Length: 313
Length: 249
Image (cartoon, rainbow over all chains, first blue to last red; front, side):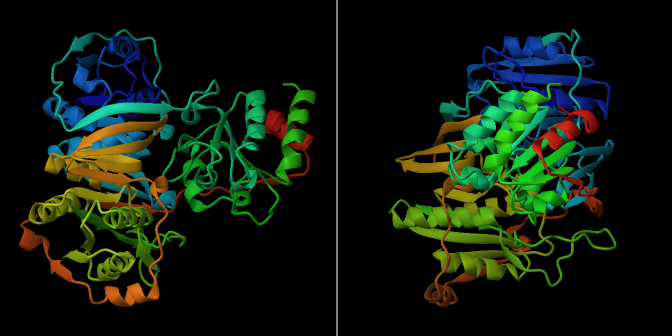
């Protein structure tokens, strides 16, 4: 069995999601190739080569692949598929966009968002916003799988795998990248942060989210949000944690003014420790919280900052 | 332009699902069903395109058991012009659904196909991307903004890092995200009118599509539960517990 991991990157650097997918791949086989498909992507390929325990890095460098457009990427994945028993990608917006297209043209029923591996053909995955866990066996000869990154540790670095060039970048002429508006932040990334401070509708305004940012900076935390807070325009879409947003599993998730709808819980209930701060003591978030504090967040957050300062670690 | 909107009947988003005692799936008997919330956004967008003159006909399509007619009638009551049901029970896997929708698309020749980014039952997030692949059309997934300019479809996509703009060559498949629009409620007169709108039924056999599953569901279990923990009464107590008991900060 050989595994192809589709690496996620921005050409210059590897995205951390790739490391979690490699760990999932290691549960299947020790023969793992990582594909870095992009344009001027030597930086990302060199970084991928340092992942411990992989066989090689395949670098497909072509202008048509620069922005990971699925129309141009899927035929490349198809052309490589014959050498592999499994093709894995992260269940991030990048992997979710690309892999089903590749699966369709390969006539494979993809298995989405796996959180566990039972054997080479049997996988566990959440359904119904994580309210049920399905164990499914694939009868396809080739398996295409997206991996829930929070369910697998990041693979270690320190390796020196060879980088080999592969061809296959063809512009399908169906789509053109026209720009991006990425959220710039000095804070840790939501999906890899050890600590997350997350706000809900209770924050009441975009300005009030500033309180959470101050708290987050004291903790070295990332800032997240519930769908309600994003829909209300308090914060950008990429803050959203939940069934259809980001799935996170930090060491501690501090939910502030979040009621705890099942769709939100789906995105954070694998956190090691959950803290809930909410003035409504009936809020469902308290049913999953390790530490619940019934308090008005506008008083609680400044108090928490003071307490952190007066009790230094 | 004709717009095709595939929609799915799922357990109502507000219902807490229960795993069946025999662990073969989740309980669907006597459970309130509704149109998948992302599909409502797709229907709304298509109707707005028709209202704006970009589209001239909106066709809702469902793949599923005969009760999916109710979901199609909801789409018609929202404003779709006609409906197509591909009757099959149980609902097939995403690849088979994509093949059925491809067959419908080849017959109807739409200028755009708009569908939800995922259904809240299987949470697969596959069908739209697969359909685009099978048709060899452009794909705009997780779209929060959409406009048509001649033969170009301009989309803004919600991605992990923020937003991404892509220009698509029409015809395109669009999968919609939450913030594209806020779906309307069907008015009573429109619900009455919807009963008279055309609804055609086909079968996978008529379309020549094999829908047999590729995946076998071995078991469905409750997730590991989380017990509620303790209440704290002050910031000092919370910080003390996080530092010394949980050791996470």
